[in-house]
Length: 435
Image (cartoon, rainbow, N blue to C red):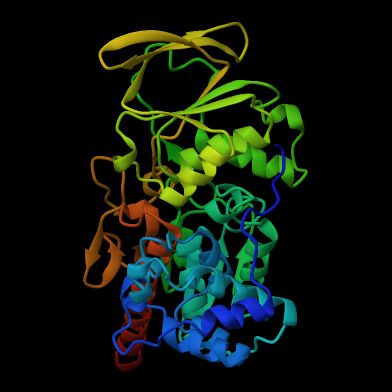
């Protein structure tokens, strides 16, 4: 099953309008309360139900810079859809698919036109172009700030481009969303690594009034497992990034390493573990198992992700730990030793993929005076002004601060930081004017 075609199909026009007409337009909408970014869901669904697509997307854009992304990868069952009043009867409105339809329809029709204010309020540098960075850029650009994004990779998008598989989030969709943000006047610099040759201090010297760190967590966590340093043990984020590069034609098939009849085990049971397991199947693995130290009721992955993984052939080993890795020659394993119910058994395996979380890289912090981090390396920020680090004028949000857990939570956090950045710059400009 090496097919990366998008799994979930979109609505047709008639299907979307019919589904939108099911919305009760509640006076106290649970769906809006369940949305981390407080999207005005009943209002735009009402417009969609009447065929007013332009009004629908404009309402969505008031709260979201990435509707085509959110419509695909948000945890709808735990958020908007899970709080729909009709969900109690098992008939909740499919809000995610509707949002995806509106965003895709708008992009394909090319109807979206926004009145973009002149960039006169100040200059903001954004480090990283993942969900948090893109949200900051879009929000501040709409508020009249000149925004430039600095991205170390060859293409913007962060986890959206290199971390979420094509079958869940097509890269062309991400590119379309980013293009809309560029059309707001945002400038994106690629292969621009802040913290090595170019530093935070130099950004300030170049005239930026504030800087936002949205660098995510690029350093994978590891577990202390005997033999775990063998090259047959790979990180899930490394694997997913390699597959993304291969699918885009940037690297060769053999550089992906994993696949071609391999027996694979994935350690962990979050959405990244599910992505890695399902991607391994698509890359030709003959057998893929997810190993988790707890049971199904305690996994952090969505139930829908689990159901789809099972359907695709992924096996699950609950209440199981890996205690030893037995390596073979080269970058293959011979086996792993697992422990379940107090008993240890040997399991033949070619490669083990680790999906046990990640932590922030220290490149920017190490090259900048005054930015403090906690014991785990997460950047410390203030509540007032929200998101400002211990270095004046430098803000941070998203995974690098250890607050969000999903794309939309990173966006939620970034929206609050964007408001703080705007107030901060307005304040320093006022002080300069009267001083």
